[in-house]
Length: 171
Image (tube, rainbow, N blue to C red; front, top):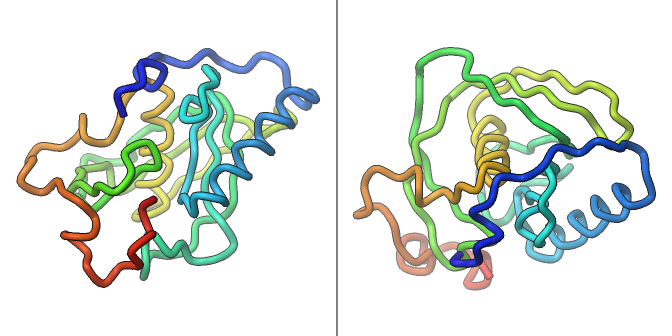
């Protein structure tokens, strides 16, 4: 947090299936795995492109009890709320290490975009999956989750808010 690259609006990807795009996605996947993240956006590793990855085939230790989100590479995404219902929940971010905040998000969304080959993706999701997608796509618009918060009394260090969570869960 504080790096100006995280506040920029990302550029759309125009070439798909390329060696460079595959290398970017592989780098993002390695970075997300190493940090045990739920997702990662290209701007978080200094790349100004509309690429996000999220999900895993396993539960995420940073978010115990949350459902598994399928592994996805989403490029040039568009996120549309499916109704007016929002819900708040705790979020963390690899770009805001060691902190969590209570963040309102649309409960149900449709996301559209393309995969690494340029093939269309069109999914309607809810709950934690919807939250993860919105969080990652916010990075493409230069937005970090604290910018969405409405009550900063619900913002603090993970180790204080969640003492039972593994001590290194937000490093």
